[in-house]
Image (cartoon, rainbow, N blue to C red):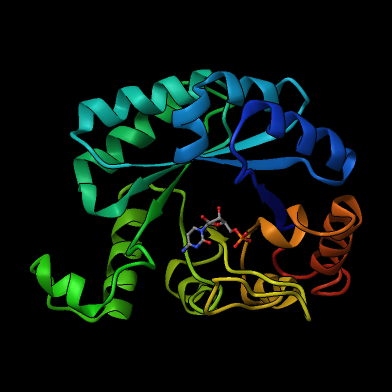
Length: 239
Ligand code: C5P
């Protein structure tokens, strides 16, 4: 069954504790990004893990293979469940990340690749010497990362159906940019609903503001989880 991941886009460890305690049993998976991790360090991962929750450590690693290998090892030793690397880091880097994760054993974190940051446009790719269009680059890098050991990719909900077809049934497809029907879309430009994202093949939905800024965050999380669960009806393909 697809899982809901709440993005902890908050400024401090104290705020993390407040949010995780407020959401309680309604949420069992949280994303910690570069900003929070840089500000609070590994202790913030421990804070979330100590409450029995899963952690997606979204640091988007991109460095020489040995450095990425050691960073993944450090993340794995914190007990994180998902980590991100950049697909453009190359074959050796992706394999090093995967091997470092597997070395942990049964609780190995899954490795997700970022293909093309959504902040980049065609001009940015051209500046970087890439002549493919953005969509083709997402496809090529997604297939490349998956073929070299990544467990899946982070992708827009509008790409998920196509990437499911390209990568097959086993790939993790983790999608931000999801909004319940009627919710404020904020700065997300290409959104879809939780049910649609799950029907299209997302395995994990990353959702922040529609939950964190709701008048009753726990009720908002529960409603989204219910919508995800009902997406396929009983026994859906990715449940
Ligand atoms: O508040 P919202 O639901 O938009 O949060 C989505 C989360 O996913 C944020 O942490 C955001 O940084 C992240 N994200 C995104 N779009 C991407 C990549 C990551 O919204 N393309």
